[in-house]
Length: 302
Image 1: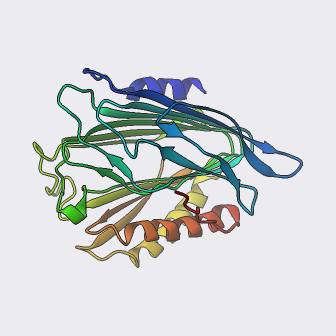
Image 2: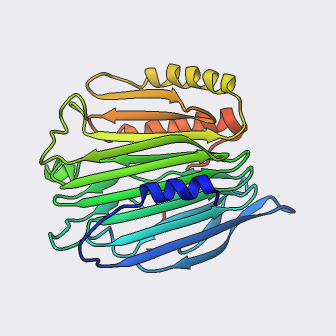
């Protein structure tokens, strides 16, 4: 991990008081067999409730891993950590087995915390393609993510936030949702995102927050080393495409270039049913544009 990444992680570490319930970490190391071109899970350290059952090899040599939480969701007081290292030229696809559920947090417990520290080595590629995060009524959640990209490294990373258990009419009844993300490339911070929603004290329906929309998503697309003119063309291409997906009042898509090495795409949606298909469509187009390869949607396992 570079000095810049270490500093970014220190900056985003949560300072939280209260009693803990579970402390657990999941450490994953990935490598690539240069003779076959196949990537594989080289080493892992797993502490319940975090678990990876096995890695699957996709047709293009990418390794696919499903993140499991054997407790069925994140409980109040849980302190979970994901540490992941991709070796040189490794191709890794990471997904969840379903939506991530964040349960109610009792007053005496710490918030539920998730800390992610990711390193993507030279010419490696990480595709993080999870389902939505659903904070239940009374949930108090804090997430910190630091992603460090080496020369030639690529990243497709999206995260989706739902308003709650919509089918039960449970909208924005969570206590606190906080998510901070830092992406560095070649010792430079290229993206810094801070989301903090407290529905009980700050109206999420204000124009400064979500307005009339309920779902939000952020999608980072990066490949280190491509010059600015390439990303300007990519931004124009994605904007033309996402404009056809937008319908004011129902779903809005936007795209911007990062300071270097990539794009960020954001979405606000009234309903969640179009959000994930839209992300998949953008991912497929971007994968073909950046790598000349077809995207392979992750298969789900129970």
